[in-house]
Every structure is written in C-alpha cells, then in structure tokens.
Length: 300
Image 1 (cartoon, rainbow, N blue to C red):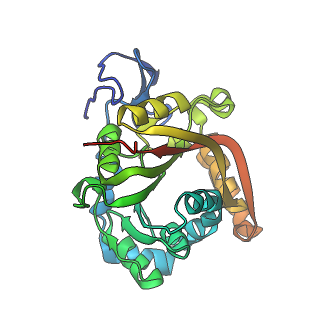
Image 2 (cartoon, helix red, strand yellow):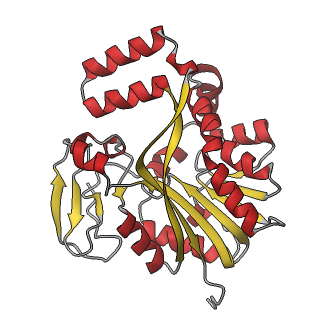
C-alpha cells in the first residue's frame, strides 16, 4: 500500500470518507485543510502503469475481434464534444497543434483532426496506438505526458478527458500541460465531479466513485484550485453529460446497486432486448469540463 499527501495543499491530515472496500478497493479520504478527496492509501499501481504493461497484441485483438463495447463507446461519445470543438474553432480560426493526453483509440483526436488541427496523441498502451494509426492514420505516442518529450511551448491546445482522476500526481501532470502549451494556449479537461446532488444521494454507491482506477475525486472548487495553483486561468466550467447506449445505462445502474445479482439480471435484460442499439444523451451534472488558459504574459 502507498500512502500519499494531499496533492493540492500537501497536508497529511485527513478524515476518512469511506473505509477500504466500501466505495471501492481503496480507502477514500478528505483533506482536513483544503477538502480534496482522494484514495489513501493506494492498494495497487496507478492505471497508466497497468495499462502500459498490457500485451499490445492481446489488447488490439480484444478490441477488434472480441469486445466492441470500447469502440462503440468512443465512437458514440465523440459528438458530445461538439461544443468544445466549436469553442476552439472560434479561438483558433487557423487551428494549430492540438495534443490529447490519454487519446484512447483515437476517435476524439480524429474528430479534431477532421476540423483542421495538427493532432498529437498520447496513450500508454501500444495496442491502442496501433488501432488509432490503422483506423485514422494518426500516430500516437505510446507513453504518458511526463515521458513523451514534447517540446516546451509547442501546443496551441491540449485536451485531457477523464484522465486526471487516474494519475498519480495531478498537480505535476497539470504543470506538464502548462509547460507544453504556448503562452495564451487553451487546456480543456473533463472529470467526474463530487459536489453534486447525485453524490449526496448515492454516497458510496456513486458510479464513478466505484471505479478502483479513480484515485482523485474533484469538486468544482478543488479542480479550479489545483488548476490555478498550476498557473492556469479559469475561463469557464461546464457541467456536462454523455451519450450512452441503454445497455451501458443498465450496466451503470448495476454498478450503483453494488449487487452482483442485480448486475446479472440487468445484463441479461439488456442483451435480450438488444439495448446496445438504443442510444441517448444523459446529463445528471456529475461531470465537469473546465476550460483553462495559460497566461499570455507567461515568462517561464
């Protein structure tokens, strides 16, 4: 087990929010001083370490031949970022270089490539990188941001969607984003949020909290604080939802139930009714997409 200090204020003092095994495998705590919620201690390696060690041939074969859910999920959710694409188009009429940290199978990165951006992706698993190259002709760097060697002040915009909650040291990752952005550059980040009615009602059953790979749990306040600590200016924060198929919605209900029996029943119903063919957009305001700017006057 690995004990960590608060990533926002550095304190080692906390109160226990959920004991180990209650919400997820990790114990989840609240910092006594700044309120950041995080997993402490951690009972396994962080996700990027696990992901980069997955056999790339197995990953690629599984994605293409065995389980299409990841493909369908990424392809479906691309349209959820139309607002972000329009925002960046307005601010960068001639486009420029856009980096996506945690680019997955490349669907979102390709969406921005189609809009005229020179795109660079980062994804720890080689198998996923191979998929993006074969499907979209995009060469993804098979590593994390801190090891990618991207030049200082080389990116006009950076995207990081549902990554910050997985990383070992969010502040250091944000500083790396700051480093590679040009002065005046834009950084868009999305993550689950925990100052919501949904979290108050569900508590330990909250869907995103249940993922053992999530080790930081931000509110609007703590996310903005860590971003400004890293040097960014907050432009705006949107509370967003996502597109999903009905079978995925049933899966999420099963996660919230914390019952293997209910999960199994819902999975069977979804399969029989072919609910994977029915999609909808759902917004319970439990995710935040924050738009940040590196100061024009940056002299670092």
